[in-house]
Length: 100
Image 1 (cartoon, rainbow, N blue to C red):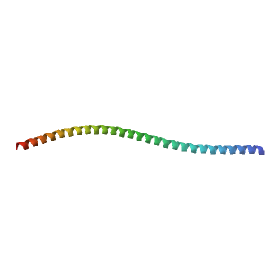
Image 2: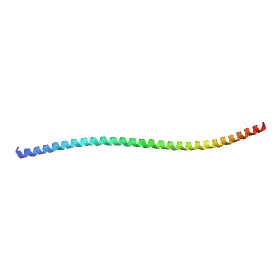
Image 3: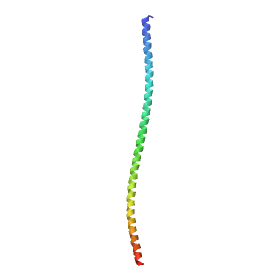
Image 4: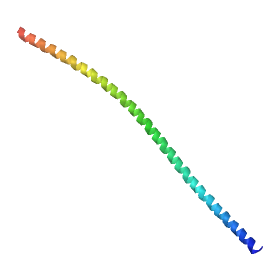
């Protein structure tokens, strides 16, 4: 073999070696990207779970507000009833005092 052919072969071998290194580097980058994608998918799932929990809590909060409003209205009615009963009791006490 002459020197020219050897140089060509050596050049091709060097190119092949660089190509193999590049392929290995690409595999590493692909694995890193795959891992990053998996982490992002997990974060998205966690965010979706948190959003669902938040929605459930908001719905429960609305229910509690309605319940609280109903209890306040009932409490106000009972106060009015108590006021009326108190006035009737006061009138009855006054009536009994006057009779004695």
